[in-house]
Length: 272
Image (cartoon, rainbow, N blue to C red; front, side, top):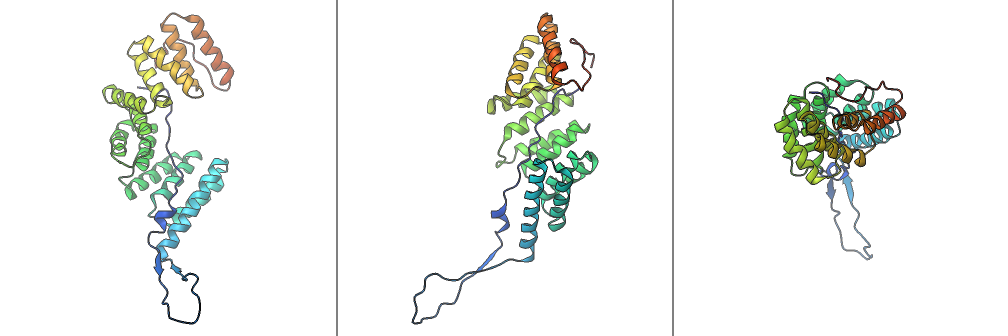
């Protein structure tokens, strides 16, 4: 089954300074009586070698994220590789490198880095979600589903609607609508404007022949986020099935206007 829409690749740029400092040793001064007024004690902070590596990695991760946001992908890769070199056991370092490599079109290398991040941090929801998304996008949708479920088992995962929507969309891609549907609907309970879940449900209802339901999800998807070519194409096909050829034609015109660089497909069933 073809997945018509992309998904949200959840990547938080990591605020871990507190964790990096957990091994710092604070040495209390020896105070002696004397003819003076003590204003405040002096503290010395000792950093062990691992602390220094962790801090260097965190700095490089932050810089890589900033460069990536600015579109400086090659420079971001340099910083991401520096983060991995500084702390090879950092799942965050391998994750940011994977994201950069994916942006550079190095998909196979990106997958290897996502896998390393999971091996280093096997219970962390965001890391599991990221690798699962990569698997799903690289023809391994069935393999991705257990990872999404493991991500949802992380009680500290900040955005479960993201993993639910991704899991549902990939479940459809894997040809498992019974797996996909409850996860997509749960995602919408948590986040009614989740564009991934809305697009996937529109696609699912269309394929099931439920065209009015498909239209409702399609319209909600178009209201929730900027349109993609695939979303507009599906909307056109839905309207064609409902007999509104004028509406179908309007969506085709939008495709031509908004995505002129891509070849359009006529409205109606494509056979795909």
